[in-house]
Amino acid sequence: MTSSEQTAANVAAGNALLRTEGLTKRFGGLTAVDDVNLQIDRGEIRCLIGPNGAGKSTLLKLLVGQLTPSEGSIFYDGRDITDLSQHERARNGLSMKFQVPAVYGDLSVRQNVHIPLQREVDRRHIDGAIDETLDEFGLLDAAETRASDLSHGQQQWLEIAMASALDPDLLLLDEPAAGMSVRETEQTAEYIHRLNEDRDMTLLVIEHDIDFVRAIAQSVTVLHRGEVFAEGPIESIENDPEVRRIYLGEVRE
Ligand code: ADP
Ligand code: MG
Image (cartoon, rainbow, N blue to C red; front, side):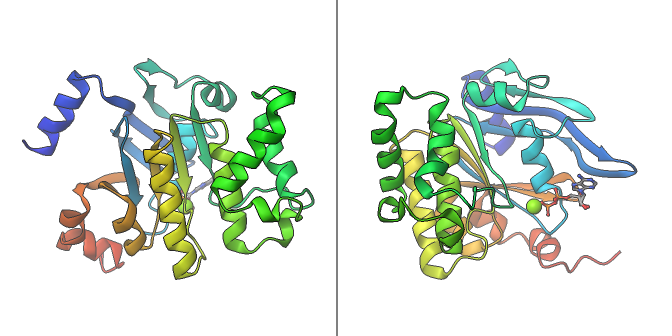
């Protein structure tokens, strides 16, 4: 089966959790996301890669509802969510960790996780829910630490903990391993696998580190100048000379 036949089969089987049609975002004269047709199936871990400025963060912000598309549609679980707010999308099970860490530095780790959980979890159960969430990301011992005093890696984990606290069906992660050590990056890959396997989350992850991509992704979408440039299993993407060229910034006009 070719990949487009596979995609058609998945759509027919109703496996698509997220689908975009002609998704486009312009900033003035710049087209940051250009006619993107993307499909993410339930249960998969997809990596989104591409050179700086390719439009990766913009695409995720469109999906989560932080930005409004110039054109095109977004379907989630078979439903058109293009006009839903970020909050409404979150209630439908779509959550995101942004590229720029957004933890509340003056609050403790515990207080940070309290913020997303308080919307859904009954007060009597919230302490237990916080402990469980922190434990999952190795942050239980740091529960009373001010978030700004955490290491960079721990801050990233805290953000993933907050984004995943309400058990989204689809979790979008923008560069979760940026600036991490090798050991921390491996740990992050393990957390992502656990979210996928133990908590049944579908993940769309932007990442630069190809070792990390290899560790987590079943399939990879390459974005270049706002367009889908290539898509497929990591092995074929890695060995695609055209991808190597754009990814290494070797394309000359
Ligand atoms: P990536 O995450 O792949 O590095 P981005 O999605 O952040 O790329 O950016 C894609 C392009 O859109 C870049 O040229 C960037 O400068 C531009 N861009 C992103 N956000 C804005 C914005 N809010 N206003 C204007 N231009 C933007
Ligand atoms: Mg980005």
